[in-house]
Length: 320
Length: 135
Ligand code: SF4
Image (tube, each protein chain N blue to C red):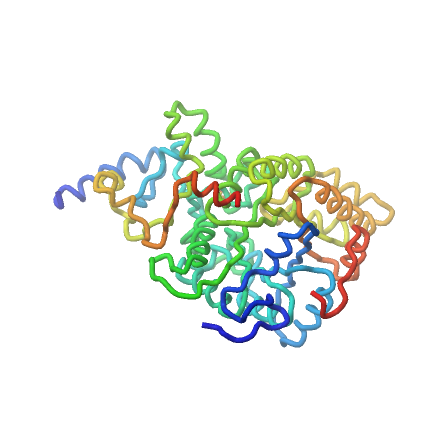
């Protein structure tokens, strides 16, 4: 397998294929960890991607290479993860169960691992009806917990079939959970199931119910005190985006008062920003929360403002 | 036995389809899911609800239907089931063996065919796994 020297974006190892994840190393420190949803790429050139990476590099520990989010086709998860890896931004390869059977899921993980990708996050995935090709066949050959277990199997040097291979990649396996979707009382237990399947960090779905997040995080934290949790905070431009999310994104419920508060403000854009800031600060105050995952729909500098406002200082270039 | 097979399959489907909307996956887990068939979930999830469950407990894919896993979670408590069945609710269920689709889960239970998992699927005892998870 891969015996080249690791690049700048990889861990300082001897160049063997089983060097560890830098994200895992970050979690093992006491510092906060910040990740970002890398924007979906519809077309264009690698160079466009590089300039986006350069903007994010000083601020983020890792970026999610998404897998056709909201059931829209984009440049593939694996291709984006490899590009991020090459440009020095630690990728989190997302793999969803909607479009690929167990064979393709394993191929995705092993293909990316060959290029040095170590963080693998397994999700169920939005249904095809969320996308612009609702007539597509849904696959769901395995579910997210099973996919996590399959990734853990690969980490041990064998495929699901039992076929063994050498130099198994030291994968850092992640999962997602929605703290605010019914059945609320079960969500923390589901985390435990995914942990026993092999998940070692969690990014949480966007959540506009602070009380639910609090309850969920405290239950998870008491079962798994060292498990890193990254709630997601979304940056939007105003009430319209909130309404859209509330109506169209499955599993995200936004209380009417929150939308009204932003809508009625004399400066809705600023109100939306302050909402995100308050959410980030609240999340960071909870035990077990190791950082924040951001989704940025503003693309206007709000993200950097938010990072500064919550006390993050940028890393100097080349020092990641 | 081989002659009996189609009869048993017919019987099982005849009984389980009207009651649980059985999809004849051939590896029945109804006892551990509050007698709610996970194969009726549009995403055929075997290990709990997706993140898309609506605020009213209905399904992301079929808004008119209650989420199968919300139902299962309630029914495992409300139905008079043995505690040992309830205790299995959060078990990690292995991937479906698609080769068993259409066969009788009753027979697969007797022959233990429904317990055969891919050779790479090695599940340690829950205790060991918990220990490892806490590392
Ligand atoms: S909402 Fe429930 S029934 Fe619908 S796809 Fe998700 S888990 Fe399945």
